[in-house]
Amino acid sequence: MAKLGKRVKAAREAFVGKQNLTVEEAVELVKANATAKFDETVEIAMKLGVDPRHADQMVRGVVILPNGTGKTVRVAVFARGPKADEAKAAGADIVGAEDLMETIQSGKIEFDRCIATPDMMPIVGRLGKILGPRNLMPNPKIGTVTMDVAEAVKSAKGGQVQFKAEKAGIVHAGIGKASFDAAKLAENLRAFVDAVAKAKPTGAKGAYMKGVSVSSSMGPGVTVDVTSATQG
Image (cartoon, rainbow, N blue to C red; front, side, top):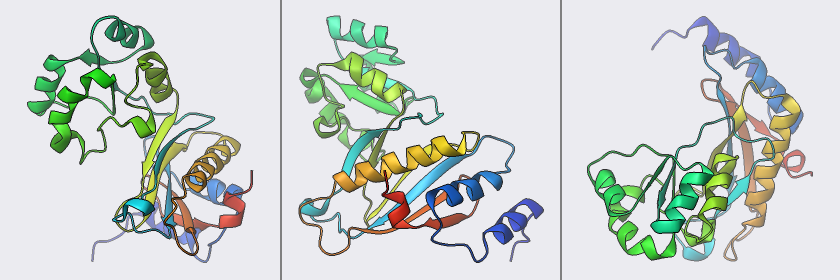
């Protein structure tokens, strides 16, 4: 068995016996033990009472975190003419049409979010097998297929987080950086939980929110009291 480093061992010891904390307690604990040499991301994981393999139990959506993510988001936009100009003016990192499709097909994917105008979807559709598994496929349900490309780019750059339930009914996302003020992280966490709560699908049976935990990129996780997480 690999020997644990001093930093990891100390972090694990700090979490022993602690569970179902309030949001504020959990955030403080995670912040105090995020001691890597870089600004760690604070991550939330939610266990939901759904089976995403059924269409009426899929959970997905977007939320704009009130205090941003602390991450620089690179945005690609499929658009032509005036809409391409709008995207560039709004701060899009990559804008194109067939040329962008060819770049992606070559394996060069240098963006974190992909937006498209509706008329571009026949082109974007050819990239489903590449963008789909990476959760980058533009989708009108989450506002990434739109004529208002300027607003979509600004939202993506300004702290918008997408979420989607995985096979086991787990939803996870980054909700800020360890360097953030604890109160701002707590506000972001509750905003994310609220968005997932509002995305409850019609087919969900029984308890919807089964568990919430929070961790940093390199640190252990701690469970959060669901009631505390759902308080506005």
